[in-house]
Length: 379
Image (cartoon, rainbow, N blue to C red; front, side):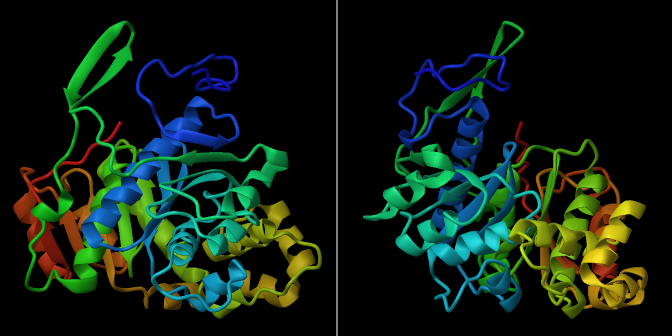
């Protein structure tokens, strides 16, 4: 089957083997396929490990966010214009996943572990989303979604029970490389009793599966069933930790009354408002942006932007984060940065020459340290 184009519009592409997911609407590119297939594996594996509905928001073959079904907090409810929602719904999983890093989720591929229902389809119809993949669609939802993007919205339907071949291949510069598919269940490498139980165990499972399908090196910060910070594709481990931490920090700062309570601006889109809130929270605006920010939101908001104290005070209250890493932590500075972002549990493969130093640093910071013995690189 021919695709719309390959990695770039000047490259042609086609599927040469394998049935692949059904295309219900739209015409995919190669990146659409890569995002959809990786995202679907993530949500299905998380659902299987936890028994709860899962959703992910994918961009450029890595998750911007991933989440289990759960409570939608008031900030996310206002942002995505959600009323009362049961905690075990598919809708809650996607709202929580997309709200993790909504700047990056703009134009995402949305993935679901359960069939898309009407309320979830209605939300998808209101956000900038390029594609969806799910194991099915409840009656009436295909029509809602197929109308997006002038009828070009891409819809995949995939079978969660279909097992891919035991070996996977890749061609690079005329060389075909084959390896065993990574099939180790992440739940088998975690202790199933003691302090890592209940919510903490679910967060660890979500984090491990998230980094399994994130471009390496990668680190995930998980809190309350949500991957709120994903540090993807860095060439050293500590930059992964810092990137994931900054994303988690911005997610948390969006919960501060100064950021959440920015004045509404007439005719400003939801995404534009989100982008301004993120710039405000991060305190990283250009001179021109600061001037525009004050013109839009007023002198009081500008004064708050210039004041760093409320940010540091609020970030000091961030806690309850589980950090997962796809590779071992090589130096203790990874732990020190993690501690500054409210990490209370670190789950990593271990096995480095300095793992004893890592464990000692974690203990000194009051962080629980788990060694899985399982590396989860993904390229």
